[in-house]
Length: 350
Image (tube, rainbow, N blue to C red):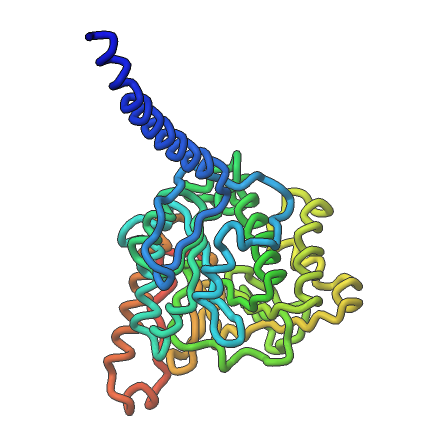
């Protein structure tokens, strides 16, 4: 009887064992697929996020593939883009992602600026490490994780340090990818405060427009001193070839950052040969601590450049936002009756 009873039960046991085995195989297959997912991006307009693959990274290749659909980047850019396929881009690492640090001041400037709040719908934050990505998901709607294998971008990258140079050149290569995907962009450092909508002030005939540390008064004068922390670039063959040339020039000028290299290649015959139209942005509108815009009635953006150290930068940026709030609270006749200016820079060196 015992042998017969065991024999009758065995098919049920086999079925149960088979079902459990198949379930385990499915789970293992899903986990294995996550290991090789190289870029994670998220936009709240596309629904709730899947489980973030925190340990994933991109290989440190010289070029990203423009076929970015598999990484989800194209989906985020589509969600954030304007009708003419323009996005606003900024990068973020752990050092700037802490609460009440640079990224919060950056977003606050959009919210208190004059007709800038709606521009947040078109802002994509490019997170360079896990904590920056998690912070982005908490505070913004369009987030992309861009992690370079073998490079740690989490801490504050001091000017001209090896990590700083890697970060700057990584950015140039990524922006080239965005252009190849057909998107125009405004790239802005997160320490650029946005007080007015800059788009009406861009030259519609230019391919590449960039802010300045020092502006000499003529927008097409190549002797202007550009600052790579704010630029507007149209996607076309000229701009794509320019970004490729700029990135490759890092090998011609080893040890230089992207801005110094730009100051050298802007005179090259190649720029004239491809027909790239460069315009430099007036610091009266696109100011910074290097050369502050004097009149709050005209200012569009202000950059905390010429500033060493996070504490100094945060101190002066907070004063900058306080000055703007005070200006916005003034009655119209007081705003226009005299030139309203800033109390900064203070702790930042110029």
